[in-house]
Length: 481
Ligand SMILES: Cc1cc2nc3c(=O)[nH]c(=O)nc-3n(C[C@H](O)[C@H](O)[C@H](O)COP(=O)(O)OP(=O)(O)OC[C@H]3O[C@@H](n4cnc5c(N)ncnc54)[C@H](O)[C@@H]3O)c2cc1C
Image (cartoon, rainbow, N blue to C red; front, side, top):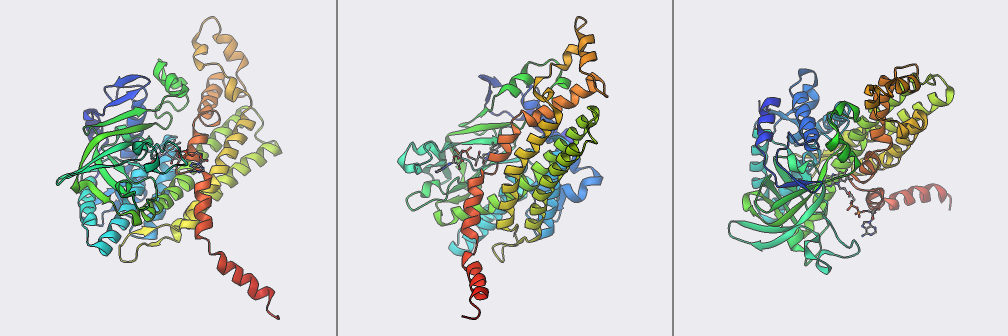
């Protein structure tokens, strides 16, 4: 079995030495820093879940390369059932962590690369698929954490890469006999500084003249020339300065942590280059990644978050003695309806999964339905958090710190005036947990992660066969013409 234990993971992560900066300071040890510790703990929990026999169907798979049992995070879907299991893994890990599982975008890039490298080799006689397969064998065998980055910094969005600072998109600056030198940066990279490997895909559908940008590769964390700059916000500061994490919402795992990854003339050996110059395949590669990611990220991961939000809201309603009021029942039910609609689309997208391209052995979800799963979630998640804030009341944003309960001067006041049918401590703990969602980073994170609505709208319009629908209407309306 090629799955490592949580202790082996902790040992490995303690040796990782990314060049990482957060809040203006260099981070030396990932497991010790108050912000990066949450990423390490969340990833460790995923390793634990993977070896937990009750979840083995969901969290593990059989490698199509070696036949060994591997983490599903590194699996290439071999059937539509595999895609369905992948969805279950996304929902389960969100329910268990209340934040990112930190193996997700990389997970969804692997099948996209398997399919597209196969296709390029078939058409052009290149050896990308052979390289990719060797790489996959390696990461599966070592059970590595692989992050996935597609989002360039993009600068002026109205301009192509060559019409502005060329580093606004990651690109090749030099080709050598042993590999390539690349420059640029990727942004919003979830957990990349704590991943063993960073997988990079092109962030735009390239045109003629943009061959240097048609680029996919993998590099190990700690490679020379790579710098990570972590996100920093009020939730980071709260985590940085607290002396007791019990008081800060999602205590162990925290918020979803991302970073800017800068590549300053980084060397990538040819063995780790999976596309270099094939502009005509960039859109297909991105599309395959996007539809898989949108199905999981939109229709399963965020549904796991919604499960937590609904649970916390129902508890608070019970603490407040309002859970039986008809409008509260209606609102909780509406939250369930929204989350169920999202996951229903994701399941349908997986169930309609097909081999793509034929002969590659790789299965991909249905493109239209996976995009709709994400679109539903973009709007649905906002509504779910709004309803949670509605039901929880103003306390969701005005609450003092639970620490005040320990203050001999005011503890009794807080205990007396913040109790409900539950003790002040119990109530405050749950309200703080909910604050993560109703007044935290997850609203924008959910909307933008895997792309804002307009991206899905464009895909949906592009792939819908309007001619066929026009024909159907015409046939009926003009039957007796
Ligand atoms: C919490 C979080 C985690 C993420 N994790 C990852 C990750 O692990 N890996 C990864 O690769 N990415 C990740 N992302 C990135 C995510 O995919 C992007 O945020 C998203 O695609 C939007 O890109 P952007 O942030 O650059 O915003 P923009 O592209 O600037 O979009 C902002 C708005 O501008 C509009 N817009 C953009 N360009 C144009 C244009 N040319 N013309 C008209 N309108 C335009 C968009 O429609 C949108 O409404 C993550 C994002 C978040 C928030």
